[in-house]
Length: 144
Image (cartoon, rainbow, N blue to C red):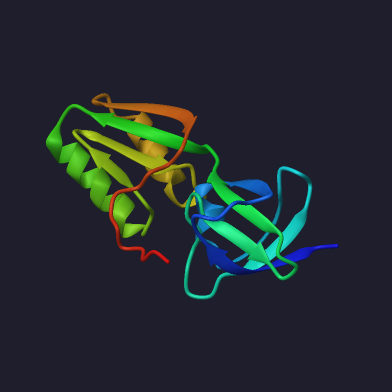
């Protein structure tokens, strides 16, 4: 039977856990399977999930949320103009971004595939793809 998570809490013990990628944690409506094989749904009105949230189901079953690794592109630049142009282009796509010194990290996504391809053709941009926990800049999202 599929469980329905009806509350999001913190700092309580959980019986089970679920690994979610960055995109899944942003969804207000989600179906997933826990580490123990329990299927559940959640409808988190007006919010998204955070690492260490505890989902409380109608029957009291508690599921701890953990972040999984995502496919991430790391773009390393040797000049500030190309760096600024690419950051602007990604921002225009309304994609989450992590900006560091002459480095941009973005999630693998169809909406930025053309940007990645263009960067691979630029001599002063080094493109790497790896798996890691994605931590975008900004605190525009509220917490609960």
